[in-house]
Image (cartoon, rainbow, N blue to C red; front, top):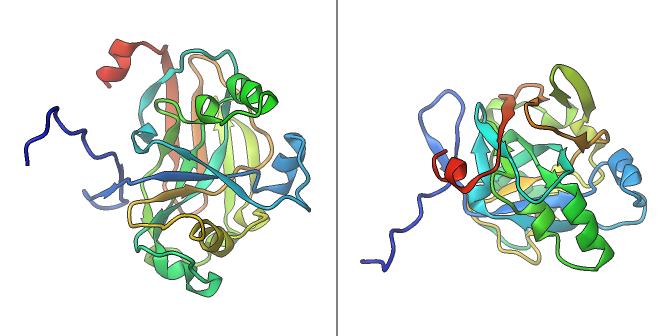
Length: 239
């Protein structure tokens, strides 16, 4: 079938120990899913139901990439997260069936233009300007679920230039992996290729040009990125 313009290249994420790629369909993110982070952002972890926002599929960035400090912000923040890779379609998925829909897990970073997000919050506007920008969803190689014993007991951390700034365990999630999948599959039909960023521990903070960021979850491949240059259209197109 001919197209009026060249179709875009399918965004994808590496799969550990193979030369295969996981095609990315959509990226969902869970807001405020760790109690201490919810408190540091001014929320109440005991009363708030989970909420979701999205990023474009082509915001995904491989580990080892030198990315650009994004335009229009002076307050770029790091948020390390467990990423669920969906491998089987479903809707209204019961909690007890959620694991059947998981292909694997990865470490991701939800990069956030915090100043733009705060402006959107104050004005009651969507968060797209703060969350859904170019290169805002770095993601490490995915580890298949069959290679993971008990992800909930693993530790999660993020360091900037060798200093650990975020740390916790996956069991600290307010809404568990199974609950997130079940709740999200109500308003949305999940499909193979979807990524779910499940929330971040406390300790989020600003990044500056030149920073070296490493996110880790025990048993998974780490995410390793550097903020190398100021954003420009030419540097983004030539990545």
